[in-house]
Image 1 (cartoon, helix red, strand yellow):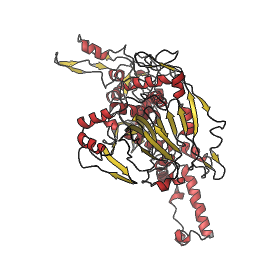
Image 2 (image 1 turned 135 degrees about the vertical axis):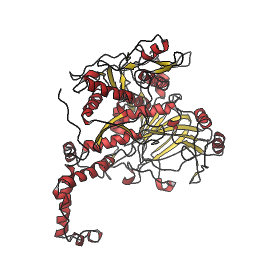
Image 3 (image 1 turned 120 degrees about the vertical axis):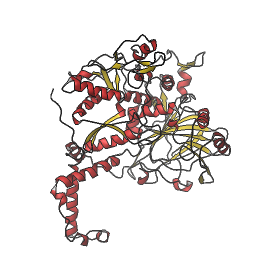
Image 4 (image 1 turned 90 degrees about the vertical axis):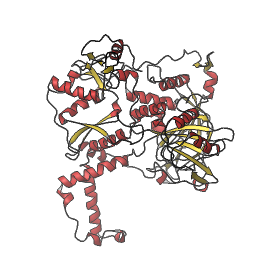
Amino acid sequence: MKKVSAFAVFKAKKDKEGSSLISKKKKHNKNTRIRRSVSEPTISDITDEHYERESERLVKFRKGGSVNGSRKSCSAILVHKDDTSPHESEYNHNDNRLQPEIQEIDLKQILNNNRVISDGGNIVSRGKRPLEDAEPNHSTSGKKLKKQRNIMKPKLSLYDSEKEGKRLFQSLIHPVKPAKFFKELWEKKPLLVKRHIPNYNDGWFSTAELDRILRKEHLNFTENIDVVSYTDGKRETHNPFGRAYAPVVWDYYQNGCSVRVLNPQTYSRNVWKLLSVLQEFLHCCCGANVYLTPPGTQGFAPHYDDIEAFILQLEGKKHWRLYGSRDDSDILPRFSSNNFNQEEIGEPILDTILEPGDLLYFPRGVIHQGDTMEDAHSLHITFSCYQKNSWGDLLTKLVPAALDIALDEDTEFRQGLPRNYLNYMGIANSEVESPDRTKFLKKIEKLMIKLISYGPLDAACDQMGKNFIHDSLPPVFTEAEKSHSIHGAGERWDAEKKEIVGTVELSPDTSVKIIRKGVIRLVSEDDEVRIYHSLENSRVYHEKDPQYIEVPPENGPVVEYLLHSYPDFVTVDSFPMFTMDEKMEFATLLYEHGFLVTGGPLERIYESDDDDDESLCSGSDEKHS
C-alpha cells in the first residue's frame, strides 16, 4: 500500500475548493428580510396516529436508552382551518420582505380520537400495541464500503451518534419532520407545538430536582444562578454575593423573583445527555437555561437573543408574546439585545400560553417576553444552539488566513500603495469623484476577488470545528460503550486476590470504530497534525483548555479512514499503514486515549477464574442502547 503524504500546514497551500465555492455564489437580495407583522398566525391541525410513541421513546432515552430504532416513520397531515394556503400571504409586495408566520400544531383531536388509557395509566394508541424497547439501527445507510476495509460483524450493536441526535431532535419537535423544519422554519419563523399531553416533557428537569441541586451542589450567584424581577417596566437582578443556598433562593422566589439556572447540564444528568446527543446532530455547541417563575410575575424585560431557542414547558403555565424584528439589523443578530420597553416593540405576532408538554421555537433576533398566570408557577427549560455559527463567523477565520497566504505568495499584494492616495481617499473625499479614486477602487476590487483564490476553506472549517469541540459537552456513554472501551473495560484491581485482573489487548482482527463521530476533529496547524477531542471536557463551559493529542503526519490518513468508515467497524489490520507494528501501535494509542470502541470483547492476555473479571471482559450479549 502506498503511504499517503503528510498533511499540509494551515498556511502552506491554497484551497482551490474555497475559490470555486465562493466564485459561484448566487446574487443576494438584501431586501429579502423578515418584517414585523401584526397579522394573525396561520393555524394548522396535525393528525398523527404514532404520536404517543414519541413520548415513550423520550422516557426510555432519559432512563439511559436510545431513541433510535426500527419503526415506521410518523406521518403528519396538515389540515388548514381556512381555504388560504399558509404560504400564499407570506410575501409582501410592498416592501419585498418575508412576513413571519407562526405554525401552531394542535394535537387535541388526536388524543380524543386515537388513544385510550390502559389500566396502568399508560397512554397507548387505539389499535396499536405499546412501544417495545427500541433496538439500535443496524443499517449502514445503504453505502457500499471500500473493499480494503475489513468489516466485521461486531458483537456490540451498531450505533450512529448523528442518527441518534437526529432522532432525539425529531422527538422534541414532533410531529414536525426535521426536513420540513430546517427548510421552512429554521432561522425564518417561530414554531408553536400545542400537545395537550402534560407528561410529554417530563423527566428533563423539575422544581424538585432544582431543590436537590441547591442543597447538594455548590452553586454561586451570578456564576451559576440568577434571581431577577421585572416590575413596572424595570428589570432588576438581585444576586447577593457567594453561594446560592436553597433557603436564600426560595426566599427570593417567595418574594416574586424568577430563578434562572445558567448551566443545568453541570448538575443534571438528563440535561447533560440531552445536549450532548443533540450536538452530534446539530454540529454546534448546545446549551441550556432553566427558568422558574412564581405565579403572577415576570422575570425579564422584552429582548432578543443571539441563539436559536427551543422552549420546553415542564411545569405550570407561561404566557408568551413574540414580536417581529424592528429593522434588518435585528434579524439573526450576532449579539443579544438590551432590554426594550413596550413602546419600542409594537404588537405581538404571537400571543399564547404554554402548558406542560408544549414546545415553542423562535430564531435569534425574535423579540420575546413571558409572564405567569396568577394561579400557577412556571418551569421551563430553554435549549439553545447556533451562537456565532454563521457564514460571517466562518469568514472571520477564512479571510485573515487567505490574506496571510496572499501576502506570502503574491507580489501584487505586497506592492506599495500609490504615493498620493491619501489625497483622494478617506472620509473627507468619499463624495468626491476623480479618476484617481475610481482607479483605486477598481484596484481594491481586483485584489479582493483575487484574494478568494487563496482562501484555505477546509482549514478554516477545521478551525470552526476545533472551536465546536472545545465548546462541546463531553459525551454520556452507554454501559455498552463503556464495556467495550477504555472507559469501562480492561485492567482493574482485585481486592481479594490483591492483583491486577482483566488485562486485555488489541489484536490485528479486532474490530474498532470512533466511539462517537462528533467527539474528535483532525486539524493541521502550527506545523503539527492534531486530534482535538471533547472526551475530557468539563460540564462547565470552557473550564478546561482545548484538549488534543499530536500525531505524526503520516498517521493522519488513518484518522480520516476511521471517520469516513463511521459508523461501521473496521479491523486494525485494515488501517492504511505499511506494517502491522505501525497499525497496532497507532490503534493502541487511539484506544488508550478513549477514541475507539471495539465491536466485541478484547482478547485477554491470561485467563482468570474470577467471575467479576469474566463479566467485565465479556459483554458479548449486551446490546448497545
